[in-house]
Length: 249
Image 1 (spheres, rainbow, N blue to C red):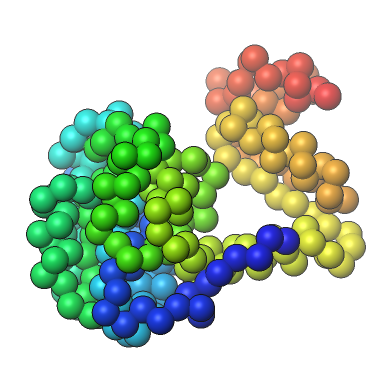
Image 2 (image 1 turned 180 degrees about the vertical axis):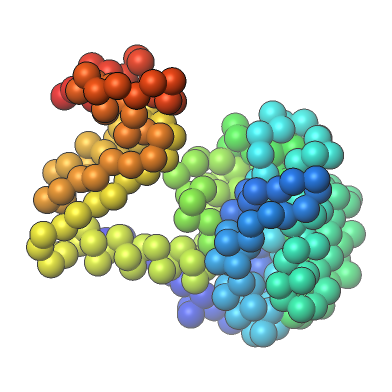
């Protein structure tokens, strides 16, 4: 397993910690309906805050296509985070530029702030170096705690690590340790359970796992493609017709 740095290696007092979290949570009528992803980030946020860091949170939300969309703002998420932390959480209506700088500039050690949806800018999903540089301007160090988004080479998940010292947050660390336990030198037999909607986004992962595990269990919507490939009826259930031949392999 690759060696990576964690927040154990950090002296964060007074420093601006840019923390990439995954706050892409279910929402209805402008309110968060399920907060598991926010709760997963709490240990990292609380630890950094307690150690005196200025905790600046970055996340995507939905698919606004590089444009501002009020329906996909992180403002309701910041409000929910405030409830969970039991303390004030500031919010900037942009993740770069004057709006972000104004919020970050007034922060003191221990403060927490959420910056607006990174996907409001086309440079996020394009992993634009200039956009990553603009994000980095608000931090002294970078903490990635968004394992669920880490497979994407976007500006806030990959590009930032080229501009700031990078560390794994507690949620990221826990996932990496679990992978090491399961795929490094595991006790046999090993069973991997993989879910999700699309086979197409996980082909490389499935091919990798097949060589490392004893039993591979496929669930979720992606199972329908494999069931269909075996000639089993799936009705109108979601599947990917273009991948039926691949599934038969």
